[in-house]
Length: 326
Image (cartoon, rainbow, N blue to C red; front, side, top):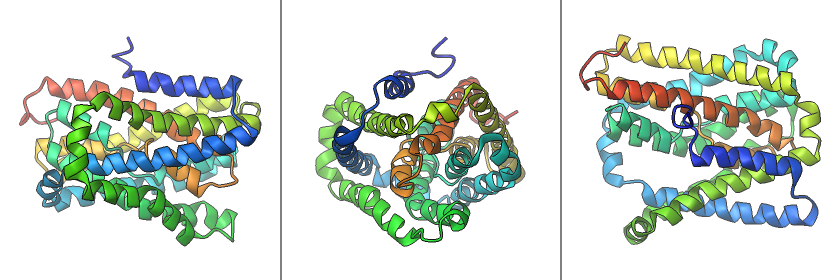
């Protein structure tokens, strides 16, 4: 049942962190120290991401620019447009802070690991998926703060400084990523010898951010503001958004004449949003805001997309690579 629902150990641990923050939230001076440790862990996480990215895969995949343009259009144009169009309905339904989180999720880049993994399982164009998903995260360090400044803080906070937020994200995420790329010849061979430790650190840093974010939210009264009905509505809204995007990501590449392996890569890269980069970005962009409510939509959307993509990838895996997609 867990395999069918795509509930791996990491997903279960995310829910455990939410429960732990609900009953044993970190607060006061301990929260400040935990926050510093989390920032250090995030920087190391993106250093490792930089060291893992193969330059050969990037060179091979970057030539397929039409595929990347379509994926970026879905990621940074279609998603935000749908989020903005839903505002008149979602603000009364979910309230302002949760809608901010929903719209922030729409402005995030695609996932890296799961986009590549699902494309591989479905026998799609893995090289292009590696390039597209990785570039989406790199470009997202610039585009996401700009979109947030335009669509969220442009109306809510006149003193919001998008330039400062971009610089903070570059220092926290991009600089370690570039250092990882530079030192890849020395670091990556060592990472291959200790994959379990690297994976534990990769996931552990995200769990730290989730625990810290929800701890501060619980202390501020998160679960008094988000009841069961609101949570159900948020799950429903995320499911509807994913359905719309997936239908378009399935049929648009067909209409544009992409071959079947490319269609699969586009489908998995264009329909997902990153939790791994999204939560650290939220920590930088939404200083002083209810961070737990901001990251709640991406956590829910992340799990829904994993479950749906897992089922679809396994279904496509049983078909030949050249057989037309249904």
